[in-house]
Amino acid sequence: MTAPPPDQAGRRAAIRSYVVRAGRMGSGQVRALAELAPRYVLPFEPRPADFSETFGRKAPHIVEIGFGMGDATAQIAQARPELDFIGIEVHPPGVGALLQRIEERALSNLRIFQHDAVEVLEQMVAPASLAGVHVFFPDPWHKKRHHKRRLIQAPFVALLASRIAPGGYLHCATDWQPYAEQMLAVLSAEPALRNRFDGYAPRPDYRPLTKFENRGLKLGHGVWDLVFERRDAASPVNPPRSPSPSAR
Image (cartoon, rainbow, N blue to C red):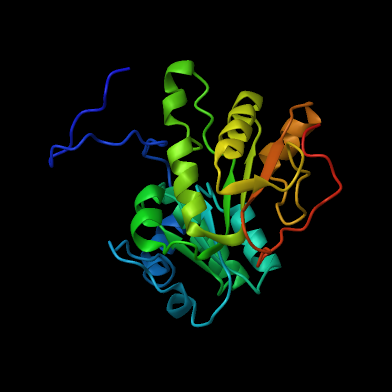
């Protein structure tokens, strides 16, 4: 495998799990970015953030990485007002769409970073400070030569585990079975985490079904959830366990 080119500082550039593409934006998304971003989009700064100050209260913090168009993110935040949510997404149309949903639902417990998730986690999130992390349907990078771009890799999982408080949880979901198998292997190999279930998890009730997911399930496609927790303490936030099967 050819190493990525060095950046201007002479370091090897990291392999990113995403490619920023120019997506079409509706007028509502453009307006939301212009009018709402100053209030709800947090600036990236290379120093730990005080999220209690950001939200104006002390509450458990949940980070979602790659929220897409933000529909599930907004639904979860609305359903769990006792928690504060921080969504991370690089694509402007998705950020604009979630800003619209924040306004429509009057969500005070949701903020956004429009920045690379690795840099946010490394530089702005304190160790052992998160009650949970959500990674729902990350790009599976189907082609074998692109597997190195998959988000759920051992170094990234180790970073996530270091930011989750003891007893906090990491919830991943995918509709691509080979990626689900990789996720299960990588998460199981991380010594700081333990699986809350025997293999894949039933879909927790707090994760809503997306339109795309519903369509896939009707066609017989599987969906796989994985819920792991940081070792060594009772969980401060226990995701509810649904009896419904995760893969159908």
